[in-house]
Image 1 (cartoon, rainbow, N blue to C red):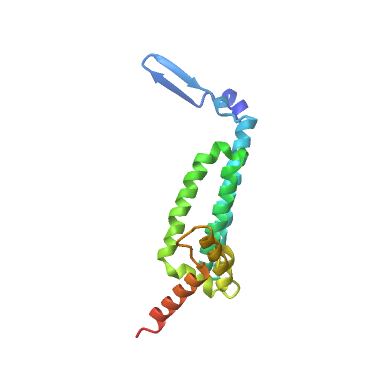
Image 2: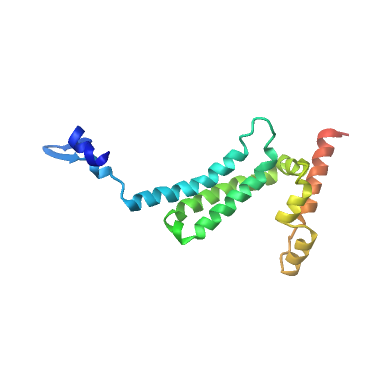
Length: 172
């Protein structure tokens, strides 16, 4: 289109600065092969977000239990792209995206409902938390490695579940 548009339609815009006239032709907007390669790279980065968004688009099934695993999948995908030389041009944007993900991921700590939703899903329960975040064994390894405030995340999740269930359903 850009190649033939100048002949068919004239320039896309004419700018005037006093008596000076600047004509911008359509062909100025023609993408090079390198431009198209960048577009495809950006599409690849955005596909990660689109895949995660689709996890929450169910009209028939509850999807809250997918929140924590989805955040972790997106974070992992973007961390790989951040470190991949192919995406070096986009690293600053990916880093900002990761910072935003971290901001919202950290808010899960203040919302026990998300942990409870993972726990209540019949296929995940506490196994997901133990495998992804660690249990007693990982806590012992961290303590041995010098981490003073190491946690058994499985036990922490179980405490959240018990406290939430007791508070919401058995108010005494």
